[in-house]
Length: 136
Image (cartoon, rainbow, N blue to C red):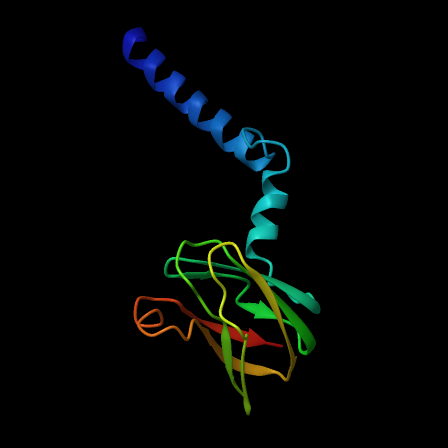
């Protein structure tokens, strides 16, 4: 009976140790809770928004604050890309379009609402170069 009790006791002890270490934050790397919060926290930053364009992706926050906003756009891809925003009575595009490695900026006064941000180059929006932007 000793042989049966020891493994069961060991398993129960291990389960208790794991539960306690999780409850006290053991086993997580330092700052990992902060990183999780930062990754899920909405971006309400006003002023400027960094935008990176690549083959068929727009990398930028999906949630920003209302007001005068400058979109700093960089084409990180190898093809020519553009940047356009539509919604809440606004339709503005960055001109000229950006070739590989080029940068440009577009200033827009955003009101709260939902906007469509996309690359206006023919076929790029269809390939997925489009996101919904929420302005609070």
